[in-house]
Length: 363
Ligand SMILES: Nc1ncnc2c1ncn2[C@@H]1O[C@H](COP(=O)(O)OP(=O)(O)OP(=O)(O)O)[C@@H](O)[C@H]1O
Ligand SMILES: [Mg+2]
Image (cartoon, rainbow, N blue to C red; front, side):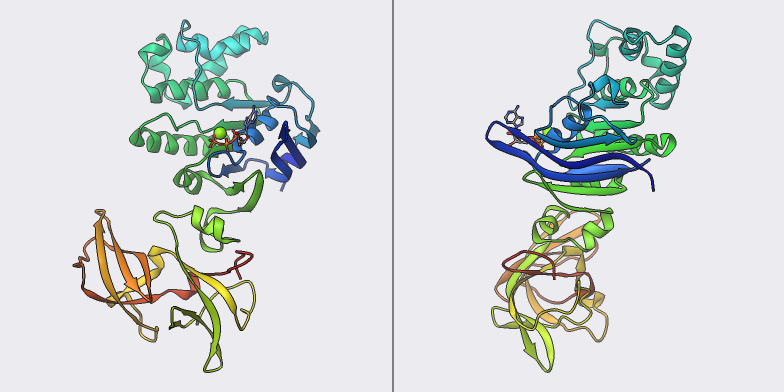
């Protein structure tokens, strides 16, 4: 696979603060790569380094095999869309789209062609004569994306382009961006702290923490085989249940023991054989706990008590008490329970994670 953007041993510090630390990242040609992480982890900083808006402290950046580390932003072959649309308020939509090209001395017929194409793709043709003040937030953001599109570049960089929009518009534009990527097949690097956006848009997700990439993988791999407890807790809503305990031996097998309760680990899909003892955390997602009639025969069954129910329409979220833990379980929306009611449960261990308590790595 060809590499579109390659980042080698990149570091960036603001004064005494090291924001990016020896970061390596290869983005494939045509890939939709999402940088995901909590606020302040360095996502925008990394994107701004790729765009050339920040000078790196050390390391190199290649775009299409060209070392662009010290090139001006305009010479890097990138288009960038920011969270704030930053359109020129006194110019029409058409002018907002074409202005950068005119400054760059692109011939008029070529400008017209590109503006037409971008506005078709983004369905903003009826808006071309309006000014930004006469547009909705979603329309403004589409124009901002259009401004990057007309530049006809190899790589698009998006920094939280949807975060100023309400929930409904966000999900609509999310689909449009996905469609845009499917039709253009450009490389896209997309920053967000919204895990739904990350899961739905990305070919691969890079999860960042403190200026370091924790895991770079396909969304389903990150979801099912998180490398460590941090990644496991960051992805998934409601978040993974964590039960602290230890590994122990029973009937010749390794089991998980927590507050005196034993859990079978049959079927656990780890990175290798589990150690025979030691402090660990068992991680189980709410949707990987089965209750009552969902439990296949042959599974180890536990008895729990319903603490609380949160009906969410399609799903019903149960809070259950068992083995001194309170944890969440996702069941079908038509399954209703009362607080205090007894409930049988089983863990889908083949989808669970066991983390070393000290290193927090998945075992
Ligand atoms: N110009 C600056 N001078 C000093 N520190 C900065 C500067 N810009 C960013 N930082 C710091 O660098 C770290 C990373 O910032 P960055 O903007 O990359 O975070 P982010 O992951 O994009 O977060 P958010 O989700 O809030 O946008 C933060 O701790 C921030 O305070
Ligand atoms: Mg940011």
